[in-house]
Image 1: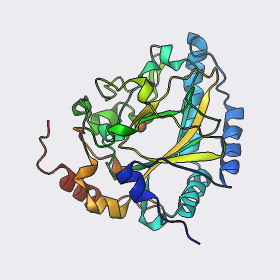
Image 2: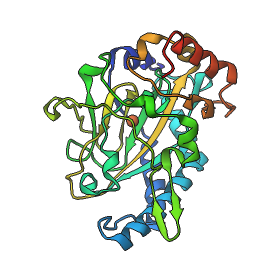
Image 3: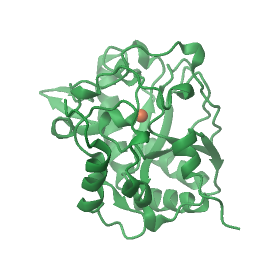
Image 4: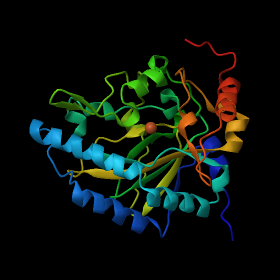
Length: 293
Ligand SMILES: [Fe+2]
């Protein structure tokens, strides 16, 4: 029997959908193969090792994003969860590494930011598939402030302009300045000004071989990594054509960013780029009457 599409409950009720899939074992094995080629067990607090770490991380992101097996397998896995690939538009598969104690590193600290993906011009109807390659809990996992799904929060998303962001390297920036390597755009990473207290954070345990589907409009972020080990994960962001056409303004509670990240997403069945009419229609529908500050 076909699974019931969990999309509406994820988007509207904020359900965090945890699931496992037999295909995840092969995905994890593939990415660990990449990691054997480019090991990231390096100390980011040592400047020489940090440069090597950033160089290898860049290669790993590149290999992951361009690997058709990873993308197709994840799409099939979404299909088994009840999504129709022909109705989906998806970003590239992104690899992430969260090193231990990153929260204490001056250049990595930016990863610790409580945000909604909408602050980064991601569509409000976007769902994120998050697949950790290691066991995760509150010492190294994802955190959500569930009560804030529909509650507007003061934030600096008005500083975000997708064009400027992409010009500076985009979501997985990698810049060389002489010999120096930076893995950041150098721009503002929008977040809420005053995050709720950490006692309120929900950080679901996710075992290796499990994944989460969550509304990217949740107030969320990476937990400080106090596990003593690198945390690896894959991420695939997507939305359905139906939700984009609906452009439901109720989903967008407090975003003031500019641009539309959806324009670069590709269809889950034919790999065609998201049609201009779809993403521009969404923007007009969602942002109508909004002060473009
Ligand atoms: Fe996010």
